[in-house]
Image 1 (spheres, rainbow, N blue to C red):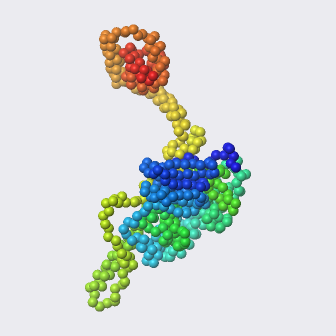
Image 2: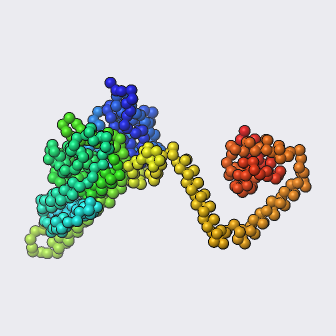
Image 3: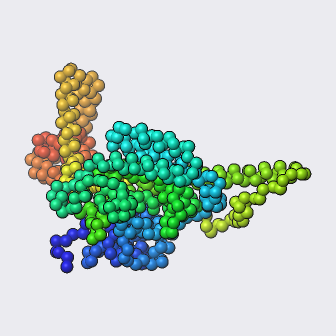
Length: 538
């Protein structure tokens, strides 16, 4: 039975940066009265949210877990608004996707399938791994690794390799040097949590797991973070490939395997160092606690909520970085297709001009692909495209004043502390302005006593005196006096800002401040405006 003091570690169920994360057990997703209703949680502690079709800002719905139900109508609801469903298992494995995508009219999938046979695959493999090694070298310099001769030699030899096996071997040797440098990465853990966690969590030994001798089934927090972030990157890679009309399963560098998106793993290779840099930033800025991770009975280490939710909010960042990578791959396949078509056209022309000679080569399988003629469809004018990438979403940081999490970008303080921070900042500005004014006055350059300021002040005073005399000649003093003003008006001015008093009287803020405090009585012509202000407020 749960303790009465038990509180869910999950944040409020909401859409942040276009991402909505559902976690826990018995997740429910259905459509009711045109709204998508999502429910998650643990036991009796449940969360729920209802989203409209317009105005929700939803672009990715991330489900973390393996228990729950969803309806077919909810999948159609997500497709209709252009949102994607990403289903991840608790260990970070990508289970399924649901995203609208369209075919752009070019048989680039067939060109992708023939890349291994026509030599294009080796060029793509060298390019992808080359950019990956360049990013890893930048991370090695960040880790202050001085001896990079062996790593640079592998990078230079990559351009001369002529087979996929050689490229894989080069990448494996570079990975051994790269992950060995991570053994010096400090892991900041809360002091009182050290007796509660395994001893192997306090250091980083290897990228390989102690259980599988492979990256899968992580046994320390760093590898658990990397596996989870790689799963998020893999989901965005698959969605970007589908949006470009490419097949995520026809790999070039990674071998084809059942239940694996090999080409999605190929496309994410250049961005793996970016994920590594993000994890390094996280290890430097955040103190990890025993609540951020959990050790399963078989020794596997997994990331827990709310850290999983904070990391899932970074999906727009990886989406934005993945778009140019996938676009470059699609352009490469299109260019290769165009070259093949030109070669066949030249071959046919030269064959028709010759009378005697060898037979012409057989046409390319690409040219045998049946083409469907485009037809106008006025009822379907909108074409599906990749979701728009928003600004980079950051991991929530603690408030600089109270330590509570701040989920808004470019914020250092929470909503509760912002009013006091603004007042303190205004006081500092006033003190700094007074010091600067005193310094200029001591130097003989006081702007308050300049010729222009004195002239402006004199003209304003003359205008006020003229209005005061005109008002006195027309209306006289009347029955009201200064005592009446102090008794009926001054006590009620405390509820109004100086700007409101200035608008009612036309006086300066300094004069309004003295009037509100009672140290100065304005001319009688201003009493009606102040009385109207007080009566309107009452």
